[in-house]
Amino acid sequence: MATFELRPLSTGEILDGALALLRRHFTLLFGIAVACEGLPTALNVYLERAGGGIAHPGLALLGWVLNAVGTLLVTGATVRVVSEAYLGRLPGLGDALSFAGGKLGVIFGATFASSLVTLLATLALVIPGIIVLCGYAVVAQVAALEPLRSSTDALRRSWTLTKGFKGKALALWIVSFALILVVIAGLSFLGGIMAGLVGGLDVAVSVLLALVSLLIYPLIACVFTLFYYDLRVRKEGFDLEVLSGQLGIAPQP
Image 1 (cartoon, rainbow, N blue to C red):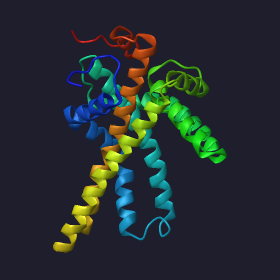
Image 2: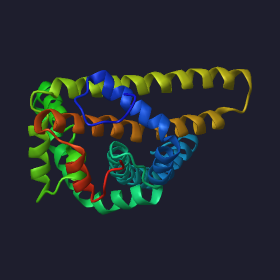
Image 3: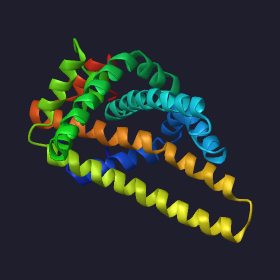
Image 4: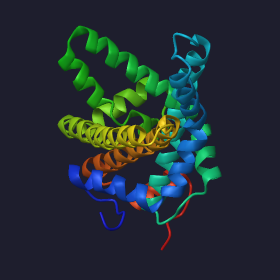
């Protein structure tokens, strides 16, 4: 996707657009990831070197909570970045984090509700769980960008938007995680080789993998924010005027 314009996108264009966003706004998106996920990531690195969560259950629980909150903040902030990219603008780090903080409660409620429903569906049968996961693929984006009265409204809205496109959502999940796994596996392999050739690099390899893993959060958020706008364009004729009204800002000429 050479330019970011509101139009229907194929699965490949969504993935390409997410990677393009990550390249163009690397400093901003990486800064968001560090600000929101840096502390829990550092805790995870420490726990790996200090015996794991069993040896330090309190720190493990703290890391899990911080990671959950950080993931929601990264999602909200990245939604803002992608939305303003469509308008020809780029928010500052503070603006993106402020937007995410203001939407934290509603994003948490919608994400928690969708995760609970997905879990219950998965416990019933695997296939319904996958369908529900795909149906709620854009629930965080809905919560961040649309005026809703409750988390139930966010779930219903996401389900309506993804109707007829759950297969596309599944493809985006699979390809995104496959790409992430390939990158991390490749770095782990190279790191293992380097650590074997040059002693004392174990800590450096762990830190490098942790830094790379931070990019997972904004990448996934970029993918599904682009998917959200793709769905709205296809189903509702969504345009820049409506988007700028949602964000309360004017598009750049």
